[in-house]
Image (tube, rainbow, N blue to C red):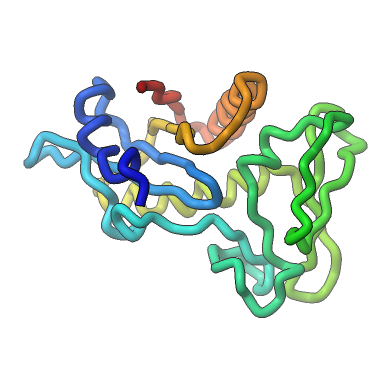
Length: 195
């Protein structure tokens, strides 16, 4: 376990004045921290597996997409590396992982993003933008945040871990895309930066 992740609640308690729930993305995983009013500090969301968080492998094996592990029965129906895909720009060197069973293709409707092609539960091919895939992931996070806080979610924080080796250009693209996704979801997002 990375020390940075283990120390996240303490770091957030000292750095985030708004006390909004925070999602930290790292590699193909995430953790959620929520503000505990009684203890006056951030804590890991127990329903998101605490300090260990959850893997962000999105499965389309069933009619309703759900989180799974990388070793699902039908790997052609599992999409991951969604942060990397969200930061991808067509016509630039997109690093294709040989383990990917999904395909990354050009988006003919929007020139500034790629499309992800995967197999669905009915064995048909489907395509989605990385923004749509992240929207699905965020909805899962938001369900847990609402359960843990007992209230409606109007604002949250996003922290992209320093162990995700994104260039400054890729981080700017991620911030832009997260802002667009959140605007469409009618939720404010705050980008958490410290170190």
